[in-house]
Image (tube, rainbow, N blue to C red):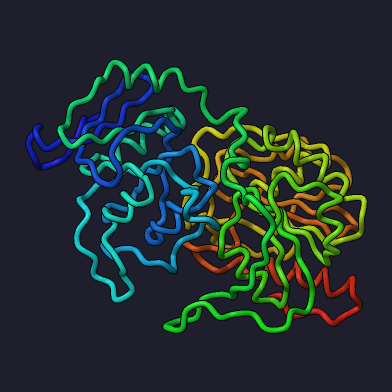
Length: 400
């Protein structure tokens, strides 16, 4: 692989991406200085880099953007997805093809470089991202160290050792690092063009969202359907949750190995399944629901990261284009009797959704809230709300 495609001299190569196999990729540093060890993945989305970098599901990862021009529209305060920006949950590093230019959007509040510094995200530009993507597709997602130093001087042998020694995401519980520290009530509804985020009126029902690394837009869409949303930490017990008298329970997205987080989360979910309360899970929440009913999860070769993934909904027969962000997947062959596979990836046939037969319980692997990505799967939130309304004896809404 080409070390760098940067059009500047070696004295300006102020960043390095060092893979566990010893590969060294040099480029121009931006964002925070220092170094971070993580897993390298690639994301194929054409828009939404700020939402991607602040998605807590990317904790422990360095995101390679296949779209060459990142940063052109700047950053703003509305497109942040982690619940607590001060915790800096999300990607630890980013890899770009082209240099970041000055912002050219009326919504821009700042330059990407300054924002990356504030967030503590290390980035490198001038990289042959096509070659790096091919490497990931062929060999899987590598462990690596990303480093940025203004003088361009690095102890490459030490960085190689750090990358090689890092155990990786398998067996790693990251939800505990990105979850909320305490319970809170969410009232912000979805964004309206040129109006921002609307506040909520009188809620119709109550949803408790277990925060394993939840995205803001998920909470907005639930609130937009008329729910009071109470967010509780990943460590909340079934007794804590039931004491809030929920009409519905949401299992959020999040980072890391679902089996590791499941060590404490799965027993809670099993207790919640003993009730007749509707339950909806997304991403990590989907994987842990599957674990709770007896299925297993596996580490993926290259994962699914992007906003252009085709998924088929077997319950309707329709195909939708969705946003994805996961490096682990539910093993379809391990699904027990009474658990229906509702969604499947048309890229590789992997599982993307389950439902419990005769129960108001379902989950999906993809991100129906988008941000970034298409809104084809927004109907799933209405499906969840209808299960709640049905339990309360109220009329259902049209799903689409």
